[in-house]
Length: 283
Ligand code: AMP
Ligand code: MN
Ligand code: MN
Ligand code: MN
Image (cartoon, rainbow, N blue to C red; front, side, top):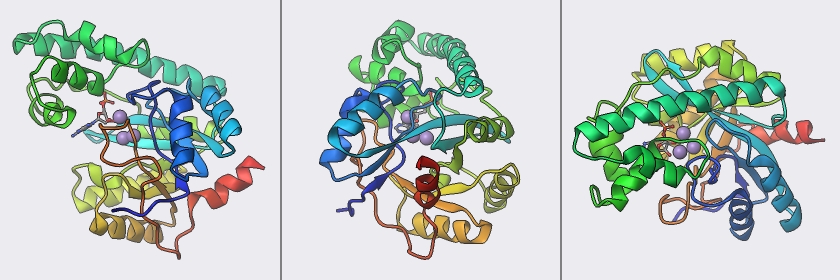
């Protein structure tokens, strides 16, 4: 059993690859005891208005967020932006371009899957995407539906993970542009799930330094997929680089994520939590 937290600064709705609409994500978070929630859909801020209205109804605070996909030295890295203006014109138009780029990638992914004997994947994935951004999770749900794999995770293990037969390389945003868009919209840039990337310790430390030099301010220390050792290592990185510490479930939906909203362990008390600065921004 993990501890519950009043702070959950990373989760997804059906605007990206979560299964619940934004208002339901907020209600579920509140029911779980979360008091400060950031909605961080992939490459889209379209769920913020609905989430904000729902948060006002249930009496919790909603932080406007986003999770942006970045290509960094051959790796896909995710940067979360927190406390940003979801109507910032530059951010909105850059995210739109990213979502458009996802469509071409999805077409290529469907071609790869067809070659592997799995037809109809573009239509199938689009059905799960429901008109919002299309990504690998939607393809994974379609493959599970077709009986090709038993769950979403095994689709990634066998078909869609990096280097697997249905994997299509894609050029995402640069780290520098991403941090710039987030800061330009008044937000705080945070490195998401730092131990999900297959980086050497040297590369990892270069990522932190480069991110910091670009104006990145935070790192996730406690998150859905992090084990105890990874939380300790992320906390050390926060101390060493002077990062604000963030935490979040990375919830995608009941049944699909092991970790429910608010289900994150506490962070070491000597770290400065990112909400110390967010609170100032909210005033
Ligand atoms: P995309 O942005 O289209 O590349 O899809 C990335 C998303 O796929 C992540 O945000 C996760 O939701 C999901 N994902 C990535 N790796 C895995 C995995 N091993 N098991 C389950 N879901 C995964
Ligand atoms: Mn996702
Ligand atoms: Mn992510
Ligand atoms: Mn995420």
